[in-house]
Amino acid sequence: MAPLKIAIPNKGRLSDSCLQLLRAIGLPVAGVGRTLVSVVAGGAVEILFSRADDIPEFIDLGAADIGLTGSDLVDEAAADVETLLALDFGLCKLVVAVPEHSLMKKIEDVPDAAVVATAFPQLTRRYFEAHGKKLTVVAVSGATEITPYIGVADLITDLAETGSTLRKNHLTPIATICDVRAVLIGNRRKCAEKEKEVHEIVAAMASVIAAKEKRYLMANVPKQALDEVRRLLPGISGPTVMNLAGGDGMVAIHSVVAERAINGLMPPLKKLGATGILVLPIERMVL
Image (cartoon, rainbow, N blue to C red):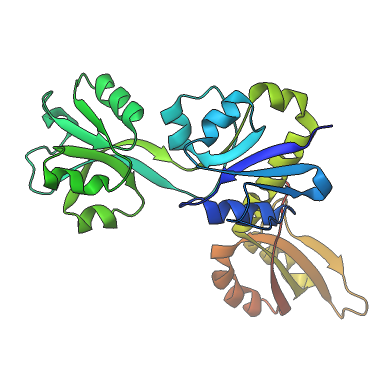
């Protein structure tokens, strides 16, 4: 069986998170930045380092079986690929932004004669055409924010996470074209041919994502407080309860809880008589 080929960005905003995810599923990648291909899992998997923009096309052509890239780049390329999993990083928006003192306050205010600069010409063109606008689209590969101030464009479309870069460049968003996130995509034919291998990767990544915001809580609690503990710790299907050897009326409870809820659970658990409270990270969780 030929190795499963996974394409990941060789640099940029998604690269580090992709490498962390691969390490989390047991595919540590060595030689990053010094090689175009890394062989892992005893030769069963090849990691291909590519420009994030090229990955949708590489997957479409079958040069790689599956790959990690941005949903914006998949949509821009209009690639015939299958989205296998939405990931939990690379979250941002593709927005329409205008100079802060512009008279354009909403899409309806944008005149047909306007010029828009963008690194996403296809997405931008489709968006404005869907709103009945026929703008001149100027494709740029970087520094999009400066184009209104050097007379290249009247407005821009660009990725925005917090909006701070837009504000620094005196730009104001007036509309969102689409939400963006990292995705795992696959070649339809190759995914069918390597269904078992692809499914293992998808399931492993999904289990890591599911576990990220959860914690494993353990404590010893009085038996008479179990009903109240169950109300505090619903878990996935309720807390697991185990008898303690020589427990003197105490039982052990184990539960998966949201990380954000941990601090709020400590005082009521202590009030109920809980002791030996432990909170542990979870590497993977299969629901």
